[in-house]
Image 1 (cartoon, rainbow, N blue to C red):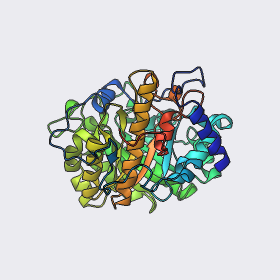
Image 2: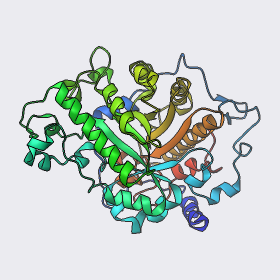
Image 3: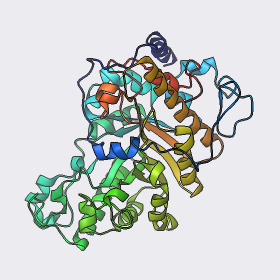
Image 4: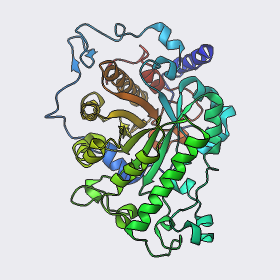
Length: 429
């Protein structure tokens, strides 16, 4: 495996001045996770950092001092070495946290093409779409057997089975994404007859359907694949002040809110804790966490006090304009200080142009992200994982922004070297 990773790194050095451009590589498979509104919220806010204490200060020679590091420490004196450059991401950070990758069904079905890179760098996988409600709910069977399914919709696991088999065969853990989300949940799940045209059910009916759905999904893995799922995104994107009620709870196109009410996210955690196995950590997952940390902490306080939630998933859809060392890491510390563990669940960092300078800036951002998360973990903050959202630029939902570690031909980019903390990438953003 080390020999394979060395080949990758040699390829990265060869293409360091030109990798990252759009290619005619594998057929793109667009993940439905991202929306234009989400992108505006996550990457479009570039306000000045006035009022935020600095985590990283420039020193006199233009290098940077990381979180609480001692004066005089540079990139060669903080635990990095040439030996680290012969390993993949998972091995490099094995003493810190899992390194995950989000994989589409297309990638899973083509592991002869992608498997070496996946297995050489990642020890956790997330299904981009195959574990979302619209992939697991069997609405046809539910409609045909309404007498028995009215409160208990049918589910199946055909869509995610290839990912399960791959993970089992290679000893890889899975982050489950996601149980309760306003998007990619069929409207028919919320109606009297399980059709798109039916009338919406009442609160009691929808709560019963929610509980039974969560019980079936978590119970399936507990019974058939114990220990495979180590983290569960119980609720996704429930808070949005721009599209929410007076408490910031999302109302726009949110049938969970419309049928259950503003406490739907809390109820989801009640049921998830009830049916989760001991090894499953329960997460709330959202984008724009840098800008709504206070709101999230306030809204999740009851679930936290009752022991229903373990962690915060920070999606981390970023760009080269974002102040990672300042604002993002402050949010990580804020969540950890409130008693949550934190995982970066959907990391990608976009560029605005195709140029050597843009890709070097991207590489510096990736270096800053991975290094600062590592430093926080080593200082005792409960940082428990990083998951990159997609395998290469052509397969990304942000394809036009070239936001991942590999280009469309699976050549490692400068960004990959940045994530590896390679000395070739400067130690500043």
